[in-house]
Picture 1 (cartoon, rainbow, N blue to C red):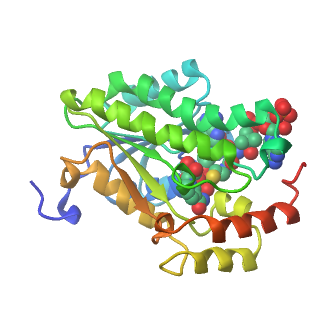
Picture 2 (picture 1 turned 120 degrees about the vertical axis):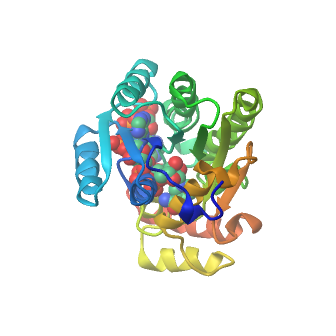
Length: 277
Ligand code: NAP
Ligand code: COA
């Protein structure tokens, strides 16, 4: 048993990341690559996947990439099968994909709401359900990337709140059912993370970013690598007895209510092209 995370050997670890072609998930992939893991990533856009694979390879990563939409069970099933054929059984399975836009419930069609629930919640079920047969058993770790919206209600985020709260509960249910076969399931709850699409959509200006940073108890935005470190922990034997948990990597943001963030969301909504109301 390694004494420290830095002693953990990830060289035989195959990590599959749905939504791994950009942002936080690509940051997580970089962190696993630094620790020598074999990686598989997928997302909808083939170009985006190719660019991410090249970036990871430039940093020495052993990476397989394929395009798949998690909303289509056949596509994600095929992506997971191809990844397992190329890189072997999956030790760490990450559902990181998401969709988000600012919209009041009354400014959103039924399809707008459904689209986000399909990507974040139903898509994660598909990733874990299709991935189960390819997992190392016992010993695998499943991780979903959740959000503070799972805990607090945020303005213009009913779709995301519903999807991410459902995601947390989905993971608790899977954790319960899969514990006996040695598969752990946890979520990571990132706070506002610098340089990401999520931040661009929810806090599009420098002023708004500063406002968000100040609203976190730690008074700063998080880094993608910090989410990566939490994923390394949840993938490693250091967390062997941890399942059904929600690990915040959020500078304390989920300890506070959402009121400061909500003020920012209202400003962002009225100032951006996302506003279709
Ligand atoms: P991002 O760069 O847009 O990442 C989302 C990824 O999901 C993209 O690679 C996207 O690629 C993929 N994706 C979207 N729909 C998909 C689908 N139907 N099937 C397969 N892949 C799909 O955004 P991010 O801000 O880094 O967010 C990453 C994760 O962190 C999300 O789960 C988000 O909810 C969570 N999070 C973010 C923040 C933040 O501050 N940014 C805070 C809390 C939680 P394609 O377009 O190629 O499909
Ligand atoms: N306000 C209100 N409704 C919106 C909207 C907005 N800003 N953006 C999209 N919608 C609605 C669309 O109008 C459509 O509903 P309709 O058919 O009734 O008109 C529905 O959402 C689906 O839109 P579409 O563009 O067809 O979906 P898509 O599957 O191509 O893309 C999104 C999914 C909308 C979530 C898109 O923003 C996306 O791909 N996001 C991924 C990246 C991301 O969000 N990253 C941040 C993660 S935190």
